Length: 195
Image (cartoon, rainbow, N blue to C red; front, side, top):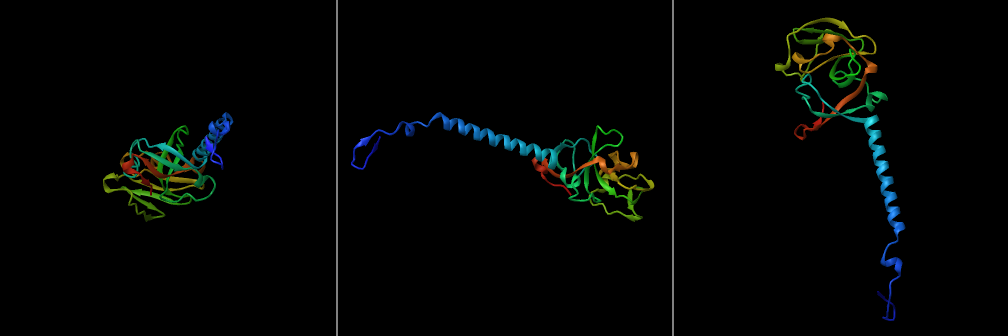
């Protein structure tokens, strides 16, 4: 009941007392529209921009550890936003079995001469500074000079003594590389940007 200007009480209109069912249906439609839009955007981000992946194995320790969850950027290389650079951690289809994905660090670019002498990496006959490889993760293996072909890359794991990489099976074709590792999101204690 609402008093009028004379102080008398008039009953409220029925529409004010109880909202009509039409409003409930409109709210549900708006909610469904927003949910559909959110799911579509999330799928687009996962398909074209960032994809969550799980690290399996120890070949990239200490930067990445077994069972860690990371995001990879699929957009940066696909659309030419950035070139693949030496030092990038890339995710690619394994050339020996393209049903499997590997993650390694780019060491040699197309046209580079790469050599490993008792564990020390040389690129274009100059020693490569590798702060990301602690002494305890180095090995003493050697590999003669190899020239990286056009549109291919030479990759190594950071944990050299436990990595299956270009020293064993050769180069990675450019078209096999589909992402750059950019961010650790799990476990929370290791969350952060990858370098």
